[in-house]
Image (cartoon, rainbow, N blue to C red; front, side, top):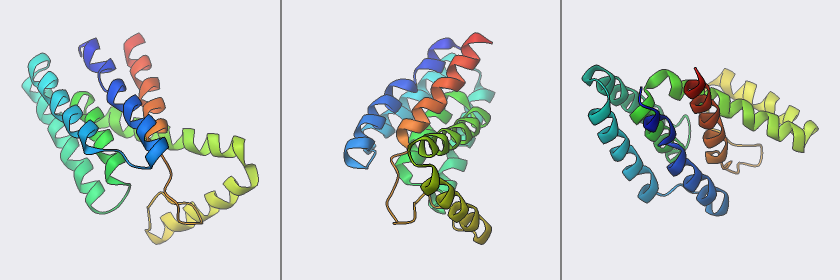
Length: 159
């Protein structure tokens, strides 16, 4: 895999992180060009089979967003990662980002985080997978996605 493709998604993720923390939204003006440019780079610099795998990963993420697993802004941001890195690194990025979110929340507010974790485990058990806290407020998740992907990109760069 080309190293340019490893660092490319970091730029739209950092921009989206800043916007998400300020406004609570990730604009399409950032995510759609990132997805399209990522696919174009993948098509030009990688094999056709890898390009098809990236397209399949984007389709699966779209379906995940359609059933409400996460906010569509976060899903589209993950699509920009999937457009160049494929499905498995994208899933690992999502998992690592969730772990970073829990660790950060635990450092800031230990008791509240433990209560929310109980709620999340209960929500997963009953099939409600939305990333909301007990008050129903949305969490700005783009910064955690950017940090998670930065770790994955560094790992892949060094290996």
